[in-house]
Image (tube, rainbow, N blue to C red; front, side, top):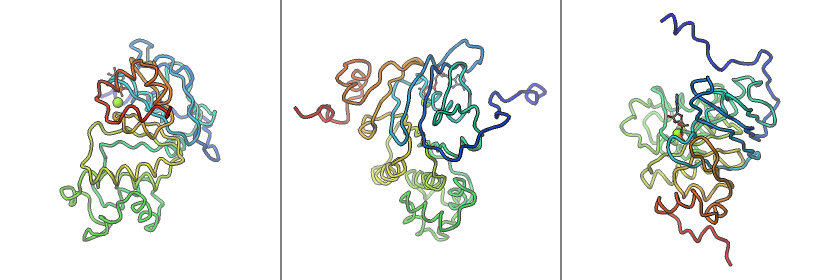
Length: 277
Ligand SMILES: Nc1ncnc2c1ncn2[C@@H]1O[C@H](COP(=O)(O)OP(=O)(O)O)[C@@H](O)[C@H]1O
Ligand SMILES: [Mg+2]
C-alpha cells in the first residue's frame, strides 16, 4: 500500500507546459527507443524514426508483440521514450500541456468502450460542453442517428438497457460519434483483428473513412484491405522499422511485407497494386 501511494507517475507535465494556438498534425519520431522497465534493459523499441505529414494516412503492420501499440502509446505520453524525441508540429510532446495533447489525439479502438449511462452521455465524453444539437450532428456523421432515433428514448436511452439490443457495429458507431464531437487533428486507429457483421461493417467503415479524411491518421492495420487507403506503410518487427514504403513499393521489394501478404492469403488481387504497364 505504502509503495503504491509513494509511486511517482513516470509521465509528468512540464512546469510551464505549452498550449499551442492550434495544431497542424505533423508527427515526427526521432530515434525513439523505449523499455517498459525504464532501465534501458529489455528494450521494446529501437531507434524508431519517421515523419508523417499533416493530414496524411499511414499504417503500421507487423507481428503481434512487435511494438506497434507501444509506438502509438508514446504519442499520447502514456509513457515517455527512454531515448529520442517525439514532436508534433516540431514541438516536443514533453513540453506540451497533457490536456492539450490528449485533446488533439483521438484514439479509436475497435473493441469499443462504452460506459453505463445514456447514449448522449457517452457521445459527450468527446466534448463535455457540446450542445444537444452537436451531439445529434456527431451521431449523424457516425451513421448512428437513424437507429438511435428509433430507440424509445432516442439519444437519452440508457446504454446498459440497450446493451443487449445494440449490435457491435452500432456500439462502435456511438464511439465514433464521440470522436466526431471531439474533432481531434490526429487519429490513432487500432483496427479490429476480426471483421464485423457485414451490414454494420459498411457503416462503420464509411464513418471511419469520413472521420479520417483530412486528419493525420496512424493505423495499426491487420487487414490488407485497410492498406489500400493509406499513403505509406511501416513494417515493424522486434521493435524496429524493418521496411517502409507504399503498398506497391513494399510488394515489389519482395521482403517481409511481401511474405506477410502471401501468408495472409491476400484478400485483394496483388495486381491491383502495380501500375498499369
Ligand atoms: N505494459 C507493458 N509492460 C511490459 N511489457 C509490455 C507492456 N506492454 C507491452 N509490452 C511488451 O512490449 C512488446 C511490444 O508490445 P506491443 O507494443 O503491444 O506490440 P504490438 O502492438 O505490435 O502487438 C511486447 O514484447 C510486449 O510483451
Ligand atoms: Mg497491439
